[in-house]
Each structure stands twice: as C-alpha cells, then as structure tokens.
Image (cartoon, rainbow, N blue to C red):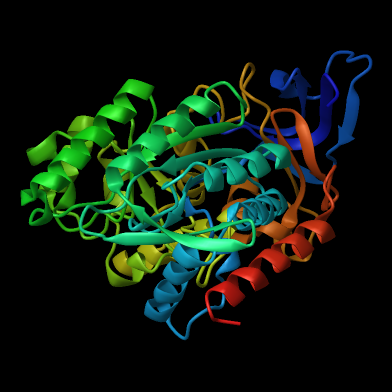
Length: 455
C-alpha cells in the first residue's frame, strides 16, 4: 500500500457536519488516513499515487450495520422463507467446518468490495440460535479471511438461547462427532475471541451478541443470568452489545428487567415498537439497525423516520445475503425510501440526504465509530468510494446526493478503498483472484450440501 494516495478531479460528497459537496475537488490520503480534502487542485503531493476521479463521485464507504456470516452460501435454498431457515439451520449446525466459514467470508467480502460496502456488522451465525461459538476455530477462520480481504468488519459472537438443546457436528481428520452446545461455554469462547483479536487488525472488531428475549422469556432465571453475563462481558471488553429481532415491547421489557441497554447497544429490526420501546431508545442512547429488505420488515414496520425525528440513531442494514437479498446498500437506500413513502403515502419522507446519512455517518455512529469513519474529513480513516456517474441511469449531471440515493446501484462503484488500501479499481479486485474466491466458495458449498444430505 503506498503511503500517499491522491484522488483528484472528482465531485466530493463529504457527509461531514456541513454536508459539503465540492463540484471538483481532491482527497489526499497518507498512512491510511485523510490528510487533506478540498475544492480545486491540491498542493503538490510528490510521490503520491494519483487516481483521476473525473466523471465520478468521491464519497465515504457505505456501512451495513446488520448482516449474517454464512448466508452467502445459503442463497436459493428452500421453497420459502420458513423452509430456508430450516435448511440453513441444518447446514450451519451439521455440515460446516472452518474452511466453509473462511471460504464464505472471502466471498462475502468480495461482494461487499464490489458494491462499495467498506464496513459491515455481522452476527456469526443465523438468527439467535445457531451461533457458531461452541469453539473458536470457525470464527478464527472467518476473521482471518476478512482480514486478508481488507474490508472493515464488526463480528458479533455470543450464545444461543438457554432453551435450545443444540448439538453441532464437528469434522476432524476425515471423521465427525457431535458436540453439545452450552450457552455459558459459548460466552467463554466469545470472550477469548475478543481478547485474541484485540489490536490484531485495525479493520476487525468483535462485539457480543445476545438473543432477544420477550417479557415471558425474561421470567426464566437462566435467561436472566445469561443476559447479565453477556451485558457484563460487553461492558468489560468495551464492545458493542448486538441483538437481532427486537419487536413489540421487547426493548422496554429488557430495560425494565435488566437495564440492558446503553449507547453501545445496537438493536436490529425494531419493528412495531411500543411507546415504551421508543422511550428506552431515547433515554439510553441505544442505536437501531433498520433493515428494509429483511423478512421482519414484511411482518412489521420499523418506524425509522419517526425515530430519527426523536434524535435516535437509525442506521441501515441489509440483513444480507440470503434468502433473497444482497449486500448492495444502494438498493437498500432506495427500498427504505419506498417502504416508508408507501406507509405515509408521502414521497417526501426520507429525502436523499437522510438515506445517505443512514448508510454512512449514521452507520458509523451506530457502531460507535463516527470519529473514525462515515464521512470524508481530515484525520479520519480513508474508507472511500469512487462511483462512476457517467452512465445513462445516472444522467443528467445534477444533484449528486439524489442520484446516489435514488438511482445508483452497487455495480456503479468503480473503486473501493479501505484504510487507504485500494481493494478494487475499475471494477477489478486488487490483489485478489476473484475466480479463485468463487471456486473455493463453490467447493465449500457442495461439501456442506453433501454433508447435510441436500446434494
């Protein structure tokens, strides 16, 4: 990676506090951070690698605040969503090994790079009950592949529900055996993973995940004990507490029973919220990951515009990448607008700048990383996209924010840069063999399908 990189002649959409846009400007990157940014031509930058961004928008990398590891290799399985969840659960629990998780991670990172998602927060498993944290090897394989690909990631690791009597199949030296999965042991493994990856990579962070328990489940002493342990672990390690699937009073119930939330809490979906739920979000500073393309958004509605009006941080997530969606955050910006405009019968709801905020700086705020990423500002990490705007569906050349939020898609990203490292240039991955990534993922997929009896 060159120490100095100069991006020039582009239209700069900064997403800084003033939401400044430079019609023709530059970004100077030094040692992985933005050293200077401005209108017109830069001062001399001798020895810098130069990227001519003429005809392009230069913008912050997109931030996906809720997705799942593993899902890249379960697309198209099952005849409907319920069938897909059953099949996916069988694959994750009975048919995977560390190579599956490494191959899937590389494939996931490749898609993110190609569609401009420079940072993503993922749960390590499917839903709340198939977290692959019975041992560290699978997560280590995933994180190693992510670090090699160069994207930024927050991986949430944690326990299954205490009520789940799970057994995962472990493959070793040509044989396999079933291993009982205990939530308390999963928390121990999660703690060890957090320690092992602290300071190992500036692109990889871990978080603690915890299943969402409703008011009835919170009467169970095992549930209460597990929740307290997860909350304590997140606090001790100074990491996010992530939950997948809040709805209809669950936030208020967990706050009343456990005092579970603070500004480092990231709560996904948040559909059909009660007034009590919304009051807890506002009082505690907990953040929301809104997933307009997710199945939960079919069954209920996240009041994202209303929450934003109340000062609550609302970010965008893809819930990617299965059974029927992708990591394309441009697609999710468009879908978020249509989702809420239809609800209010008002297409002025969530204007383009709001959508771009949710996908960049608000995403960074949801991950407690707003001082590092989410906007193009001097001193921040150089997570940057170049979007090719000279295309029929992005023409004529007016209002770049509207064109990005309404008309662009992931295939319009020409260049993806993370921490000053160019990961894609002119739609080609840099330093990675995309064909080899695809072939590796196919081998892992076919082996998992065979093991699961689905071949």
